[in-house]
Image (cartoon, rainbow, N blue to C red):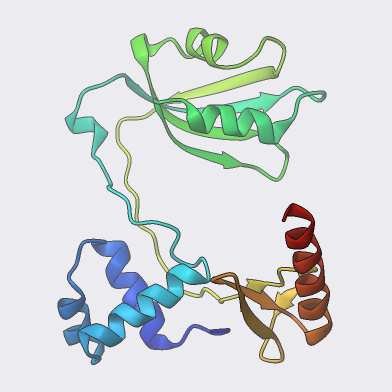
Length: 198
C-alpha cells in the first residue's frame, strides 16, 4: 500500500467521526463488504496511518481543573523533545504542539488554575524561559482529511516511498523502502543484529 485511494480516505473520515462505527455501516457507505473494510483498516494500521482508536472525552462535562492553552518557551539549553514528552505524560495535558520556533503549546486542565505552580511540579527547574497562558471557554476538535497526501517514509533512509518503492515483511512486521538498495541494506543490518542477539 503506497497510496491511499478515495475509498481509504472515506473510511478514515468515517472512523474520525466515530471510531466505534461498525464495519458493516462503513461498508454500506463506501460500497464494499464488511470484510473488505476490515482488511483496509488492518492495512492502514499496519502502515501507521491509523495508530490507535481512542476515546474523545468532553472534559468540560467532568468539571476537572481550569482549561488553559499555555505557550511554553523552552530554555535554549533544554531538550525540547524531553520537555514535550514530560508534558505529554502529565495527567492534565490533552495536547502538546511544537511550533517551528521550538515553543510548546499545551492544552491542559490545570488544577486550581495555578499554571506556574503546576509547571514547577511537572518540569525541572530552569527548562522554561517564559509561559504565556490563555484561559479557554471551550474546545472543539474537527479533524479533516481534506487535501492530504499519503506519504510513507523509507525504513532505511527516511526518503519518501513512491510508486517505485518496495515493501517486505521481516519477522511479521511490514517495512517500506524507497528502493531495492535500501531494502537490501536494511535486511542485511537486521539479520546481522538478529544473529548478534542470538
